[in-house]
Amino acid sequence: MKISSKKGLAVVLSSLKSFEKPKVLLEQYPTEADIAAEVLWNAFFRREIEGKTIADLGAGTGVLGIGALLLGAKHVFFVEKDEDAIQTAKENLKIIEDRFEIKLRRKTDFLQEDVLLFDEEVDVVVQNPPFGLQKERHADRKFLVKAMEIADVIYSFHKADSVKFIKELSKDNGFNVEGFWRFEFPLKNVYVHHRKKIQHIEVGCWRLEKVN
Ligand code: SAH
Image 1 (spheres, helix red, strand yellow):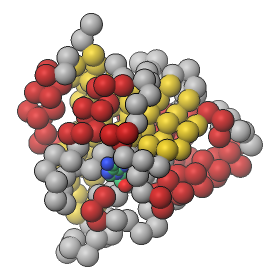
Image 2 (cartoon, protein in one colour; image 1 turned 180 degrees about the vertical axis):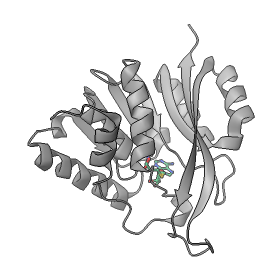
Image 3 (cartoon, protein in one colour; image 1 turned 90 degrees about the vertical axis):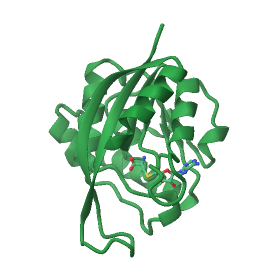
């Protein structure tokens, strides 16, 4: 297996399965392959993927965690409370194993549970949690607080207008905002209440680092 470019990573990730029947209340919006690749490639260059233990919180179909494995992560915990999603994540891992003729399963743990129950210490968290678009405002808060408990480095997706919220929460928990990327997320026509065929929302990925 050799992934030698960001584009190459995006191509492989784009071959993965997405949510079969996305669940509205769980906000099952997948991260687009090229966006996942952009963020993971940056993390890789900062030496925060290869040989590292990583938690993908709210892993969904596994695109972030699988991308990390492709870039040489030592171990990835996929934490996801939805049984169907975690099943798809396992199938996605199998797709990669077959395609590259490698064994990755022993480098992984698939945990079907609420992120609040996860308590392993890891090097890095990568997460694209629910943003609270549906009902719970700042449904992403508990993901961030959990990530700050278990890791010193966090890559986390949120609505782009969460700048103040993330800054304050980071400060309160002894973290600094050390990086920010802005993306347009297509919310494909997966939910009935989306009238336009494809809507976009402005999303940011924050890199947070614990203050020493
Ligand atoms: N990280 C994936 C999925 C993003 S969608 C990706 O980037 O493509 C957010 C995911 O969080 C959904 O799969 C949803 O089922 C999961 N989720 C929502 N609340 C959760 C919770 N409390 N604990 C664990 N997973 C949760």
